[in-house]
Each structure stands twice: as C-alpha cells, then as structure tokens.
Image (cartoon, rainbow, N blue to C red; front, top):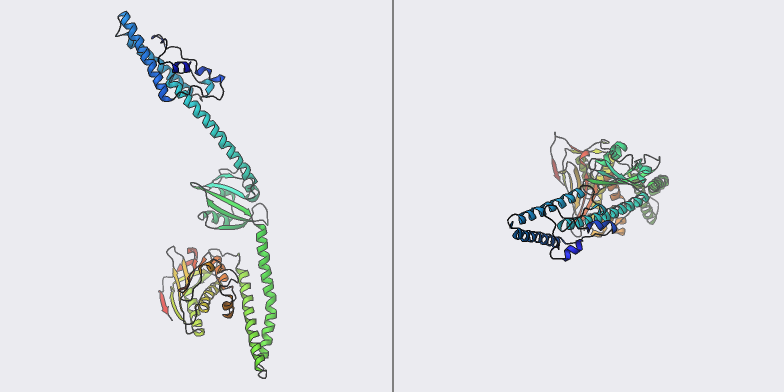
Length: 483
C-alpha cells in the first residue's frame, strides 16, 4: 500500500479525525521478502507524500466544516487527528528501534516514518555485512598468525598483553588466552628482558635464552604498532647462535695454534739476523721474513682480541674507571716520536672518565689514532677529542685532514679485513681488523662507532658512549693541548 499511496498525489479517502487511520500494509509485508529493503522512498519524496496527506485531510475538514457550518472547528480537529496519528507512528518507530530492530518486526508505517524504517533496515543490513566481513578478516588473520613460527605479542602502554599467537606459548610460555590482560614483565622475569622492555621501542634487538626450552636462543625485537601499542616478536635463532659460537671458537683455536709456530719462527729469525757473516741479500730476505712474521703475529693477536669481544656486553656497573685523557696523552707522546712530522691537537676533559675495561678502551684509542696516522699522509693534522655530550654520555673522536674516503666505502669500513685500498693498507702495516675491534669495544661498552668522511677533506671517526658509563670528576679542570 505504500507504493499505492506514493503514486497518488492525495489519499483517496482520509481517515476519520476522531481516530488514527489504519496504517498501510506495505511494511507489514516485509517478512515475505527476506533480505529486501521495502519502502525505499527517498526522504524528500516521503516528506512530500506526508505533506500531501496532511493537505488532503485539511481539505476534507474544510469541506465538511463548510457543509455543516463548523468551518472553524473541523479543520482543527482534522489537523489534531493527523498529529495524533503521526505521534503514534513515531512512537512505534522509537519502540522498534529500542528493541533490536529487525525487518520482520518493523511496525506499520507511512511517509516519513516509512523512509526512516527503510533507512534503518538498510544500515542494519550493511552493518551486518561489514561485521561479517570483519569477522572473516579477523578469522583469516588469526589463522595466519597461528601458523607463524615467530612468537608475536601485542602489548599496550601499561605492558599488558592484548593478543598473542600460539608460537608465544612454545617460545616464551605466554598463553594466548590465560595470559591475556597480564603484564608481560610479570611473566618474563629475565633481567635482560626487563631492561629490553624499558627501552624505547625499535631501538635494539636482544638475544636471550628461551624460558621454555634450555639451550634455545631467541632474538627479541619490539616495534611500535598503532596508538600506545607495541608488538614484540621473538624468533628462534638457535642455529645462527651456534654457528656464531662455532666460528668464534674456530678463530680462537686457529689463532692459538698459530701463535706457537710464529714464536718459534721469530726466535730463529732473530738468531739468524745476529750473524754478521751472512750475505746482504740473505740479510734483506731475513728482514722481510721477520717483517711478515711480525705482521702475522699482530693479525693473530687481533683475531684473538675480536673473539673475546664478540657477544659479551658489559653490565652497566661492570668495569673500572678509565680516564681516557691520560690514555690519549700517553698515545700522543708515543706517536709523536714515531711520526714527528704529524701535528696532534688534543682537546680532552681530564675530569671525564668511563666505566669499562681498561685494556679494551686503550686498544680502542690506539687503533683509531694509529689508523689516522697511518692513512692521513705525511705532515697531516690529527685532532683528538674526548668530551661529554648533552645527553650525559661522552664522545671520543679522531679527525684528520687526509685524503678522505668515498661514501660507498663507509658502511663496510668496520668489517673485518675490509680495505679501501688493499695494496696501500698492506704496505702501511695494517691488519684490516683495527676498526672492527673499535666497533666491538664500543658495542661491548653500550656505545657505537660512526664514521664521516669527505674525499679531499678528511675523515672523522666518533665513538659514542652511553650516560650510564660516563661520569665526571669535580676536583680537576679541563685540559686542552696541542702538539
């Protein structure tokens, strides 16, 4: 009947004013059309139909009033009856909306209320489709996440677990259902993991032993995800860790085995070179052999040092105070004797010290300063700085005005045996391990190595150390020296 009334400009017979007219049966037929959206009248068209109905009722009231001589009363009664009918229809719609609206239970309607019901039905159906779509997407995501070999845990800003996949149970003993809502730092009590969770997200990775399987090594990484959320991914890297340990052990064993024959060769060479009766050519050959054996000894020493440094990070309170200003002064005096043509400029804070391993920090300074002397060229200017940084840490830097290094070499410069100019590096006596040692010492002390260089201008090597390791004395002053 809705369609019939929409087609006619005015209703054929208006209802009596004393009682609301019977509603059209258009909406009552909705259950017979499951899934359909009957009464799809646009709002403006429905309002026009509603207005036409009101005008028709008023017209009938005027006609009846003119006939009966009650022209002032009957139109008013007709309008009041229409308002009562409209209120009744609106009340039925409100009651329907408050009772989980469904197409099958929609009340009889007409005009504007019919358009309202049709809109609600349309949006309800669309919402149901969207809900089903989201449910399917979530189901698909959960099934895919369940197949991931890496443990994945989502936490909020309070470190409460919001979601985890089944792999988190086998790798971290975090149950997807039972532990939801628990604080992850209450479940994973390893001090290293506790410190890792306190760091800003995405700053670093952590390798720890699995709390569920002894001997299994996990790599943890935390990344930001959405608003006030973070994702922790734990990956099984046991095989990689074993290979790394095997390589480290192999290098250490080979280096130890090479030390003995090199010591014997050096002893015999020294004895032979003391014989003044040997021909000049033989003496020259023995000198070259001695030079290469010495280079091999340095190489073995560096390999052994690297094998000790790898993978062993110092605790924040581990180590002893090391005043690098004193170390820098000692090294400068030694280098000034070896290369008097170089100019050394030192800017070091004698009050500033770092908590760490003295021999390793000495090796760090020695390698960077010797590297600058070796590659900067004759008569170069070498600037050495040891100062605190605004964040409370400290920076040791060595800058030279040598030939510089092209940009594409910089990312690999601290790799083992990487050389920018292989022939020149070997002739200068380098082993190709100095910067690798510097990088590992810096990492072992919680810092890092950065390199800046411009061809034709020079290079700048900087080692940053964290605030937890750097402290300053207050009883002595700042020193600035030039040599």
